[in-house]
Length: 172
Image (cartoon, rainbow, N blue to C red; front, side, top):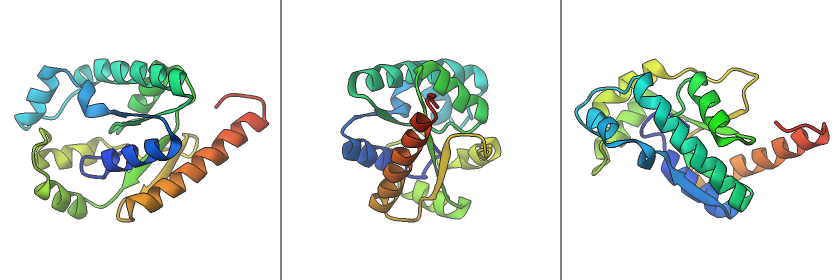
């Protein structure tokens, strides 16, 4: 999870490969109207996001049921979005926030080509971002580090929280 340009897709693909599971690109689950809205430089509202989160969550749950785990790249900027995604997936859901400062992400977006999300919407994403609360299953990593290092940290954390959840005999 994270704002545009944080490296979610690169990281997610690498993590899915290392865990031997499917990777789902959240951008591919937006409907045409939402893509056109973003392409026009207009931020999505919750009415645009709910069906997208439901579609992605269901696909994530199906992929996890098939492979034992699945990885998705999704902004998940608000707690309600994370909760909705987790509910739609029907399983244990963990999040990794790829964090970075606005200037670095703006630099990255200025070099990205072929994507419908314009750099002009970066501020709206930062305005929407609700930093995870301590009770949420979220690991925060600085996305300035190499994707391979981020992947190693995330895989170790996922292994640890999976063990902690099963030690107490409950699903997290």
